[in-house]
Image (tube, rainbow, N blue to C red; front, side, top):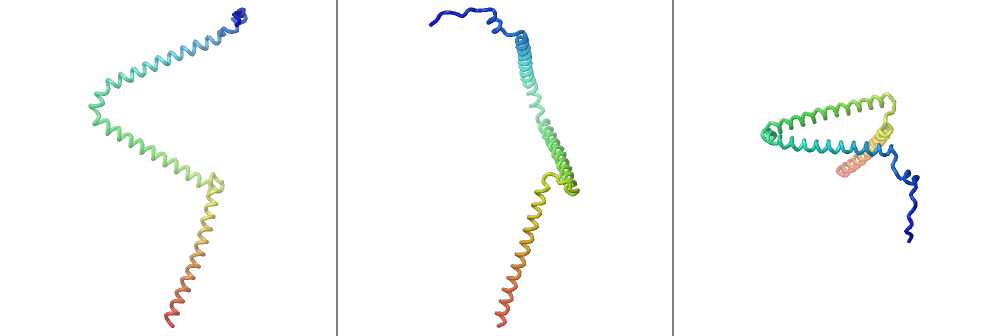
Length: 149
């Protein structure tokens, strides 16, 4: 084991010390972090104090505040739902206008494919119904001829 230490030169000391730019960055970050930490502590302290002081008032006025808050929440939900319906209706009408004018909006190909499948299925069902109707007529004719004989 060697107990020899490496010689310390000014170059190695210079390389290991932080630059002034790094020092300024560190001091700025530390200052901002401290400010945020102190302000968050003051905010939580203020919040707790306000909650402690306002709890008796909230308890006394709760028969008024709870229904009022309920009405406000329901009214806000109604306005939000109404606005959402208006936006959906406008989007739908815009899509339909683009579809009717032939501009091929997003999903038009799928709609055309589905319509073709529905028409095909309807034609097949119509043919099956005709065939079924003819079978029923022939059975009914056969039953009437047996009754007549």
